[in-house]
Amino acid sequence: MPKGYWIGSVEVDDLETYKKYIEANAAPLAEYGAKFLIRGGQFINPEGTARSRNVVIEFPSYEAAVACYESDAYQAAKAIREAVSVNNMVIIEGYDG
Picture: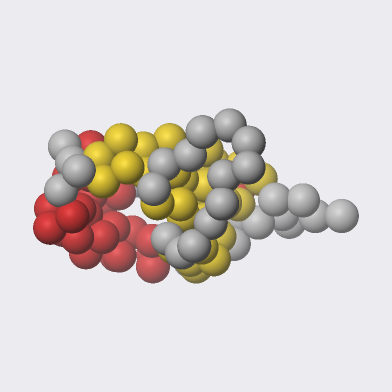
């Protein structure tokens, strides 16, 4: 079964409030077996546009990735993030070849 991934690109306007989002998303991410593969870090943007912070989170399955995002606990955390950041995110099934 292919893994699932969240790929996010974020611009944070208020880091102190954003830290509350990070605290709030810890429980739902743990519940659905999430593992951070990329969390910030140095990058270059040779094509297109980018935001200042990039994140890739791996889940045991695509279904777990979607379920985590749709969970009440994550939606509550997301409400904190939305007030202080701009975010692009895709939830994508990994390649199992």
